Length: 248
Ligand code: 76R
Image (cartoon, rainbow, N blue to C red):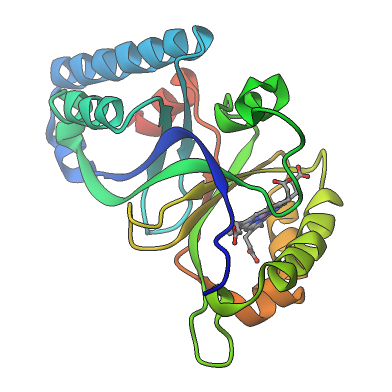
C-alpha cells in the first residue's frame, strides 16, 4: 500500500448555490420584497460580524450562466454551525424566493507534500491563517470540484509518495507563478461530498482563472490524473450589489 499523505484540516466549508425564483419575486408585493431584503441584509450583517471576530468567513458572489444565480461560500469551525446556518437561512422569507441549485460540503485542507516545517504546524500563525482563511473579497470567484483518477494505469492512489511529491512540486510551481493574481483555497471532501476536492479560486481578473487552469492542464498531475466537475464563475456581491441584482 502506498503511504497516505498527511493532511491538516481547518474550517469546514459549505458552498451553497441558489437560483432566484424570478416569477415568485416578481409576484410578491413591495412590502413582501422589502421584508425579504431586510432578512437578507440581517444575515449579511451577521456574517460580517462573525468574520470580524474571526469565527468563520463568508463570501457572496453572483453566478454567471444558468447553473445558479448566486453562491454563499461559508467557512465555519464545525459542520453543526454550517448546518444551523443553512437551516436558519432556509427559514427566512428571502429563501422563499430562491431555488437550491447545488451545494458542496468540504473542509479547508493543506497537505504536506511540500513539507510542513518543524513542530506543531497549528501553532504556526501562517499555517493557521491558511487553515482558517478570511475569504478574499476579490472581484471574481471560480469554483469546481475535482478528483484524482483511479484507473488501472493512471491511479494516483497507487503511486509512491516520491512520485506524488514530485508531481505536486511541479503543480505548486505553476500555482506560485500566479501569486498576487489568483488566490486558491483547496478544500478536501473525501467522505464528505461527491468529489475528492473543491477548488475555489479568487481573482480581480476572471481571465486569470482560464490562464491558470489551462496551464495546469498541461502539468502531469492535472493532465494525467485530474477529473473535473462543473465550473461555477461569478462576480462579488455586497449588500448594495445584491439589492441592485434583485431590483425590478
Ligand atoms: O499549498 C501550497 O501552496 C503548497 C503547494 C500546493 C499543494 C500541496 C498547491 C499550490 N496546491 C496543492 C494541492 Mn493546488 N490547485 C488545484 C487546482 O485545475 C486544475 O488542474 C487543478 C485545480 C488549482 C487551479 C490549484 C492552484 N491543489 C492541491 C490539491 C490536493 C492534492 C492532493 O492532496 O493530492 C489539489 C486537488 C489542487 C488543485 N495550487 C497551488 C494552486 C495554486 C495557485 C497554488 C500556489 C499557491 C500559493 O503558492 O499560494
